[in-house]
Amino acid sequence: MSRAGWILLALAFAGLPWIAGEYYINLASQIFIAAIFAASLNLLVGYGGLPSLGHASWLGLAAYISAWMSLKLGLGHWITAPAALLGTTLVACAFGWISLRATGLGFLMITLALSQVLWGTAYRWVSVTDGDNGLRGLTRPMPFGISLDGATSFYYFALAVTVAGIALMAAFVASPFGAALRGTRDQPRRLGALGHAVWTVRWITFVYSGFWAAVSGLLFVYYNKYIHPASLSITSSAEALLGVIAGGSGTLAGPIVGAAIIVLLKNYVSGFIERWNMLMGFVFVLIVMFVPEGVVPGVRRLLRRIGERRKAV
Amino acid sequence: MQYWIIQSLNSLALGGLLFLLAAGFSLIFGLMRIANLTHGSLYMLGAYVGVTVLKFVPNLWLAALIGGAVIAVFGGLIERFILRALAGNALGQVLVTLGISFIVADFCLVVWGGDPIPIQTPLALQQPLRIGGVAFPTYRLVVVAIAVATAVALYLLMERTRIGAMIRAGVDDMQMARAVGIPVSRLFTMVFCLGAALAGAGGIVGGPIMSAYPGLDADMLPLALIVVILGGVGSLLGAFVGSFLIGAIYTFGTALLPDLAYVILFLPMIVVIAFRPRGLFGQKNV
Image (cartoon, rainbow over all chains, first blue to last red; front, top):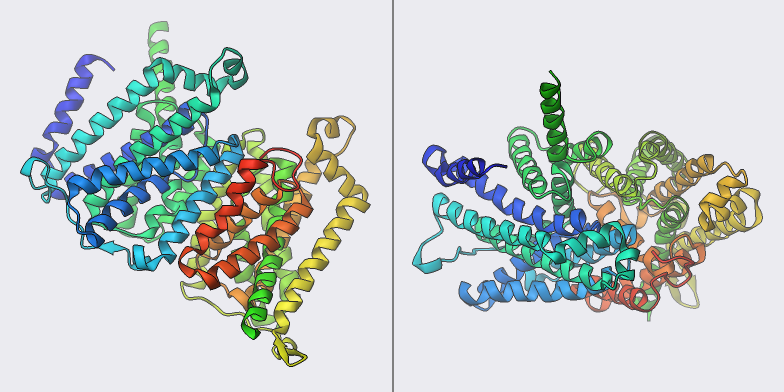
């Protein structure tokens, strides 16, 4: 995208609260949260070639740690937020170590199994998680004394975190380390022969990806002021993965667009029918069968073809 | 004493049901390299189909056969028309099975509603079996017997028949199997139908113990995954040992530490993945 395009985009995001109603501002906040979440998963799926079906673990875990510490220990946000990020990242270190014993489908099955363990624990460990009731009665933080309870202030907060998160993830991918990561995806054996520590590259990516998913989890729990085991479920992981695949894995914009599509679709559809899961299933099947590369690369290819045709004429 | 006997039998019965589920999953994964995430849904769909069939045919075993056949056909359709179109695209296949599992789960919710539907234990098996003053729940014993009989039948199929030899060849070396003229494509459909039938029939056989409820799929699939990771992909023996191991760990874990049963479940999985990534009886790494 050109510089003018970026500036226009930034202006559009900054100006949205002036033109849109509260419903749309909140919707945008939800899209931001989903976008960070999907972008972090994209690091693994798109750039690392490691299809994880357990990404909801990090969103849910960070949200649960933060919620539990503030509810049951009565601690303030200034300590719960870093503790949640740290705790989640440490668990990601451990889960990464286990899951990366395998790659490909094995990796997918292990991440799925591990996340189901967390999900089941969130349901069963009632003394800590309040089980099916979820943890409620949470508050939003007040960074620099600014209340985030209004839709607009939370929107800007989420926007700032999202921009920072996406920028740092983009920097990660663009760095030499990111090049090595793409190398481990395409030619793991050659990269190993070149002296790169393939496993370590993958593991660091796993942990980094878990960290950003934890950030999205914090935003998620701040936004909803509530956390339920469903956030840890395979449905939650699958929604993120669908966002990545639908938008286009391995591209920067893909997961953001995909996440936006999912959030909009979910909100729109839930408005008049309750069959979101079935619709998501059909979207999954259709995307994989007919638009396997994702919307963003698909549109890009279409634009390029139109451009070429124009040149030819 | 009575309590622990009941728990042991519960664990064996759960292990037996898990075997019905995991054996198919393991064979499908081993042969076709498809992580079939619809497997839990096929189990649940089987249970629900059983509920409906039982309304017309008041015999659980007949219902299990009919339900198994229905699920086998459903599985065959998925394999022929959807998975086949994505041959060679492993991630795509997994995602499609995931999508189908959502569709099936929601479909069951629409058709059979959100409340758990109990399935009656056959009348003849409702009385507990009394041996030496201790009462054994008969139906659970029967489930274990069915699982063991299925295991033996599968073993004979795999080891003593021509089809079994072809499947084993396909698991070991797909390209070579194709090269020597084994109709791998037909085997794929056959194995997928077989796995689906086992899962579907398992759902009905397990019905009197677990009943049919929304979320049954999400409860069973991770257990099957852990069994297969633990036992080794494509290994019947691994699925058998893993099922009863996980059945025991899950049942006793729930009885002793109800809060953390799920955490206990994954401990053996970590140990196995850390020290033996191919699983206890697997030939290849997952």
